[in-house]
Image (cartoon, rainbow, N blue to C red):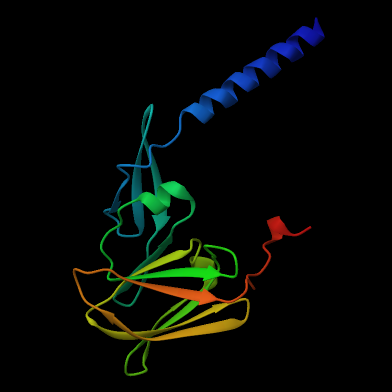
Length: 177
C-alpha cells in the first residue's frame, strides 16, 4: 500500500513538472513600464495560461534613474523604456556577465553616478541621462575597462558594449564548491 502511494505521488510530480514545462512564457509581446511608485520596472509576460508579472528594481541617484536587466530570454526580448544609454557587459567566452561596478562621468570628468556591483544583476545596465558625452569605468573582478566619448541623446538608445578579455567575475557563494 505504501509503495503504491509513493508511486502515485511520483506520477503526480512528473505530471506537474510536464505541465509547468508546457506553461512557458511566450517571448514575443513582453511589455514593460515604470510602476507608479517609480521604484521598479514591471514586465508583463504573456504565457499560454495568462499574463505573468515580474519586476526589476529601478534605482535613482540624484536625477539619474537606472536599472539592470537581461537575465533569461524573456528579459532579453522585452521592449524597455527608452533610457538613452544601454551598457552590455561581456567577458571571455561568456556572452554576458553580471556583478560589474560602474562609474559614469560627464565628458568633463565629473562623476555623475556610481553603481555598486550588487545592483548590476543582469548583463545590461540602462541609464536615463540628458544629452551629452559620457565616459564609463566598469570594474569586474578587479579589472577595469574604460570607454570614453559615449554620445547620448534623448529619443535614441545608445548601446555600448564593455568587454573583458577573460572572465574574472567573482564566484558567488551559491556557485562555490
